Length: 297
Image (cartoon, rainbow, N blue to C red; front, top):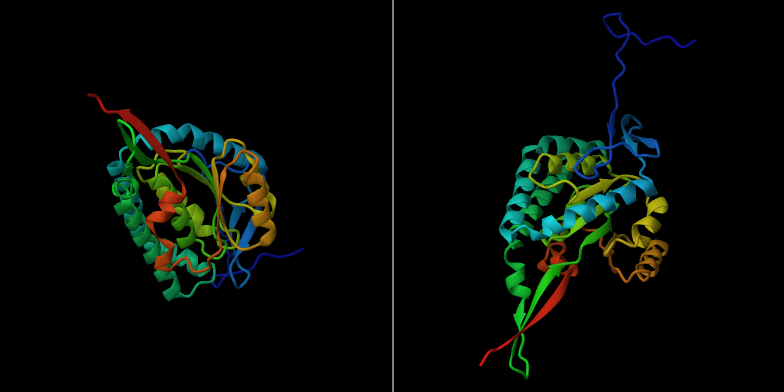
């Protein structure tokens, strides 16, 4: 029978309690309905945490929560959405040491971890600044050959399923979520399987900010199991896939045709680059609504 290890004082060494990183759905932290999890280990093989493995049912529950939250979120003023994104940036900055520590636990060097957090904060501030500006840039008054005014303006697509970058646990996640929600969309995101810790900690930041429940829903699990469910759901309006695996890209494109949802595939692996932030990322998930108004005589 194995005996307990002794510390220097001669008493039994304490066994640490591993944190269970739960899902984030509808502003709550439920365990996966499947009851499955895996033990996440650092580069030295030391167990760090229990990570939930989300199922199809978890995804469907998240879509229901997102759809419920979408109308009221889209109806908020651009100024208010910008305020909330800026608040998320403030709280991420305030918890910088925790995020740096988790990134280092997942294998990043200290300098790279610091840079990752800085870029994530700056990216949130960037999109907060665009919140009340992209409509002006991309709206238009169109010339027509009749006695009408013709206006075109962007409106949110709706519910967006996202498979976040695998190689970037924080910046990649922020880079796909921020432009989607600042444009009035709501999202269900599958976090990086390789770097899951910062994704769920980021959901704690969202939970304690002013973001309404259901606007951002974050799941952990495996791409192999969930990519089909993320792309074939009939109440999802667009899908964002980050990666270059040919089989997954084919699944995204084929399943998007089932209800004519918009597929977007981002194959970049450098999410820290300034090229990864742009108002056109907001417009990827906008639809252009055109209104005709007669001119009275």
